[in-house]
Length: 279
Image 1 (cartoon, rainbow, N blue to C red):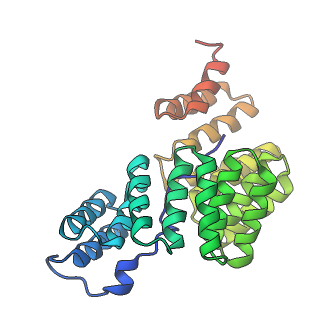
Image 2 (cartoon, one colour):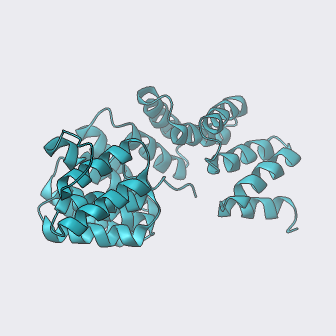
């Protein structure tokens, strides 16, 4: 099953830039190191961002922003257990923050601990009933448990709170896809792409939907765009392999499955094994 990318950028509050907008040339205080971390985040350098927060924590272990932001950066780095630990510390320092619960819930989702994710997202919603990201995040946890109706309800709530929430449209579309409601799925993912036309994840989603509808040319066009935008988005090679296989292009399908399998896409490994007769 396709997984949502474990990226917390849509959840990050970027507290530091709001509170400390002046970026120092050389960080000295804990708050300045937090700001420096946010600057690294904006450049996509999450390792340096996390290290900056570590410096902040060394200076001031009670800096709630340093713990909260480092938890986000660890999630971006795939260090989910450490992300949970940091978010837990942030919650202890700032128990009224819905973001901290939501961020920890996201890390739990990435670990496949969906019940814990739902509990945290529900707490985030209790703290802020208008938190669209918390509804979207909880929807993802319900989807992970196969509770698609509940997932769709949460995505719909997120969209109601933020009508321009492209990710929630895409996620609701994928939940419809998993229910084989392809027309509804196509409408939602197309809406997501109308908001964010260069979203490779949504392009891959729509490609899968087109494939199920046997609209192979459109499916191929979308997945080719996704691969061109990010050649290291290996799930897209699995998607393209499925399109090739559906059209009887076995050798091309094998090549794409192998590329995805070589980059740890388990479903691609299974598809390749099936196509090659277990060889």
